Image (tube, rainbow, N blue to C red; front, side):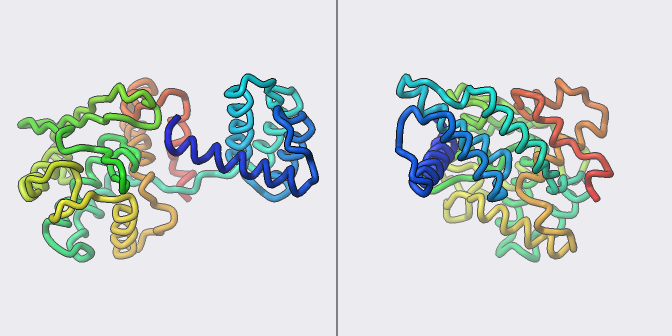
Length: 285
């Protein structure tokens, strides 16, 4: 199980355990259906989102199946309760896309917020690649224990950069995916920005995007610099996040007429969820 999924399941099981203890319910496994039904009702009354409730119920289901127990979450009433939550608390994703114009402005205004020319070149390349490769922030940045994009996973050609994404949200078994980015005539060209960055990057092993002392670029640092540049440009920092690059890539692809299958493949989506990423002018108000 992916680390993030495991953490979410543990959170859900803890919430369910606390709920049953507070209600005076016995900690039976498999839990009676009425325990799950009351749990969902409680989540709704406390204004939890449908997505959170669904993930918590999925945790209960997984735990039962793991221990070869009857799964009470398969009950018709459970599915209808979750459907009711989905209908009641529909919330529109208010995150805005990074547009092609905004990407240019971001990459052009990094110098004032970066401590050196090297740092500006690194973030310029990171921003460009995040957009053009439809990357999730976890595929680009690193944690204390893992390196998402290794320097050995980057191949530079004369007019192309090839990235190997070793593992991602939709690639739990680590088969890996190759992404090819071609050079463009635009100032935001991912090939040009990567070449400029790699010419300055010290010869350290490990993370492809790293600081001059070899420390890997983290999610927090990526988001912090993004917010600083957005502030300079007077853009709303809370509506443009690290995920806005992926949203922007899908929106831009749709705007230039790429078909659904091409967008789905480019973003490595396994379902029709990519459609929720495509913003129309009305959704950006």
